[in-house]
Image (tube, rainbow, N blue to C red):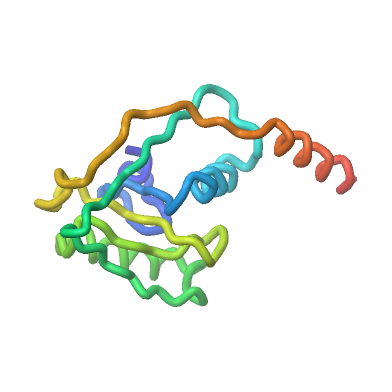
Length: 140
């Protein structure tokens, strides 16, 4: 709901796609960037989403050079959302520029075909938090 209320990289306020990452590690990196820290406070959960072969995935073919221009990325996502072109839109990850993220449109007629697993708790190797603390200490 936060993306719909506040807007995000690929949507303006009032437009409400569901954001998903290509894989677990990509989702975690996106969360780290959003929260501004490595360690998670509280309990986070994830689920897996399967897009069946008969559900088309639109590729945004978005130019990486334009990823930092939020007005341009929002225009792309808003257009896809409002036109109900597909249930799923692939966009480049602004965090890695290599991985993909996916926008899901729950108002698209094929959205109900997507398969969503039960949620599971997020787990992160504690060494990642220790490494981040070491980076901070070394930066002083």
